[in-house]
Length: 372
Image 1 (cartoon, one colour):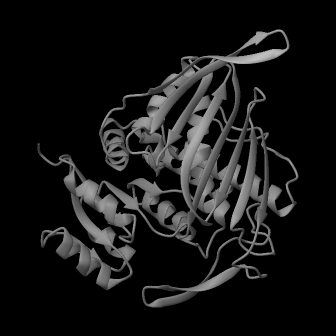
Image 2 (image 1 turned 90 degrees about the horizontal axis):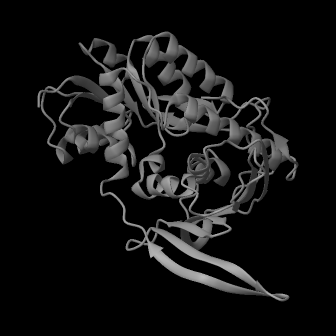
């Protein structure tokens, strides 16, 4: 099939390499440029993927403006750089696929979404889990009412690292599970609470020095007046979240990057059973556990118990999300699953959770959360 769109990949670190791999493999994409501030990374991907000599390899974002016919960019750089890069890309007329989170500031997210809408450009966020066959299958089960009356949800996401130095465990880990619950329930929270514990990185620092190509600059991770400012006690390693949805349904989430017990497990409990998404289980990632109580006098007897491993479609989630970006560009239709507005909702939730975290778990209400 003839290539139809020209894409540049910005940032080829741990995740950007996977984006490059998927866009190179897509029959309707011609990767014409790769940008990264580290020349050694550019040399590595040129060799790894045997890139054509015509592919522009550069350490400078500005060089993209010399690439003729560029259609879109895929941005996999630190979140602190997203706002400036995405804004410039949209102003240059490029469609944008951005690694999550969209930015660290809800107001910046809304500005970028409006800018994309005004220029009739696609702005899509790489919330890969929303394209996972288990998440798609789980949404079908929940919204078909197979769990009965929904009672509560829970999730655990733990591992021994990697420990981030720019954001806490909340901003690093929570976005995945919140995105899944929002998709399964078809709602966004109206009230959130968060508590946390700091062991590794305490202190008052609000920024850090970083190497950006040939330029050293102070990147302020959060502005002190931002609703998403971190606690002065440092970056939380352990975080407990409670999300309350419009119908009263509540979700409880456990996050930690200081726990060798690696878990990526999420569930919803209903009156007729529970639905479990266990990413660590290769044989049965999505399981429906049926069961309910039969009351006999003052006793509650478990009945109708059975376990069903649900069959799922095949396919790499990242390949599916990259293909969705291509389809959105070709059809000039925003993604219904992971648009910039969906990404904005998630950043608003994280910002509200950070306010609660700073205030020791005080409830924070999201009355003005962006609507799709």
